[in-house]
Image (cartoon, rainbow, N blue to C red; front, side, top):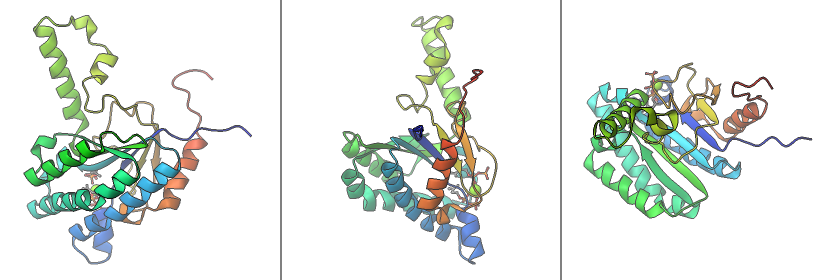
Length: 236
Ligand code: IPE
Ligand code: IPE
Ligand code: MG
């Protein structure tokens, strides 16, 4: 039997919290609250499966357009998550990273995030990256701006602006590209998530709403990944 390696990096668009709540006659915020449990479950399952990088899309640049109380509720939940899970992250050897315009987050959330990142910086078992106020187009424009500034200052030549140089200016620099991208909630789109980084990711879409996504669903996604033949543009 040939051994098929599992994905090293799994990225997840955690979608469907609002619909999960609506189906129960609850407020959207209740759906977001219910979305904390699968984060815990999937983190454990990922570690067990040998996944080294897990990237979770928690809040997009576009999500700022949602009602103020929903946005506020989401950041309060994130703050609670950071406070209640920190010990567990340490115990599991998880390093926490954040990508996105984190400067835009409420101060308390930002402080808790920096503290958690600092405390977990030396952990090496798994890297958990949370995408917060994240948008791929903004990230790419920002990278282009940084490189353009270096070129104008005469530090680099325009010819030095290669795909590698651009990758080096993304928030994700230092993390390998995702091997597998999962989206829950049934929609078949990327919603401005890791557009550059997912150039060769295998895509997996499931109708399961994020609060219902469990270990078995995650295992099914990994099993699907293992049946794929990745060619990266080559003929065999
Ligand atoms: C995903 O769930 C969480 C965030 C975008 C913050 P949604 O809130 O988008 O849930 P649906 O898609 O409306 O069901
Ligand atoms: C994507 O979900 C963002 C997150 C899961 C954080 P959305 O619910 O915002 O995406 P659209 O609006 O359906 O494309
Ligand atoms: Mg949604």
